[in-house]
Image (tube, rainbow, N blue to C red; front, side, top):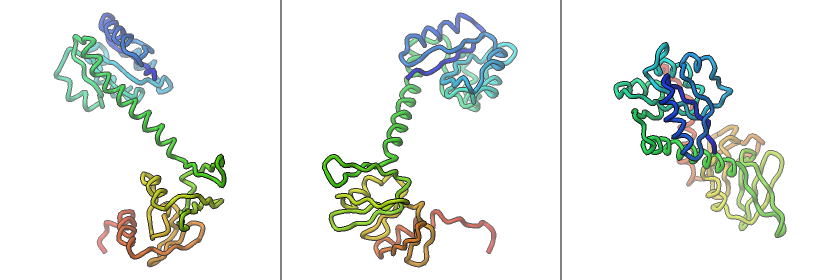
Length: 246
């Protein structure tokens, strides 16, 4: 992970302090530096894909707060580097992620940026987990047979004694699992248990008529007595309602 950094400060020695600190931090690289806020305004673009934007506030021509209003969207994180503590509230208004007061020691810099690096690492891990969780592998009919099933293609899952059937738009898979085990595997996905034998994809529900659910493939499943309350609570929470007086 190498995060691209841009530094904007009208004083060259202040830029050098920040670029030296960046060089000491693993995972950061200097992309561009500017002593002119106007030049930064005209040259930086969304295509640069900037991760960290370090910016002074008290600069001639355009101050950092005004500049941030125009280029904030071009960087993932904004870090103000300033000698003035009184701008902190205004920095919050332009979605600043860090507010570092000059003189900026390496220790102060590292502690502030470490929070951002940890956030980035957590985001990357979550994205990886989400990618891995977008499909399920189930065992087939012999030791080295496996099927990869896209979770968003599953319509419903049916229990068959010691096995389950996973029904998708195009096919049915049978594997040696319990409904409880597959329910646990899908707990972070939009599925709902509707009776002792069936788990249904919420996106596959086409219509509800009394205790009967009609799915998008026109199959019908009955809602079990012990599952009605949870199911209709989900429906009520998803129901579009008018605010007009009846």
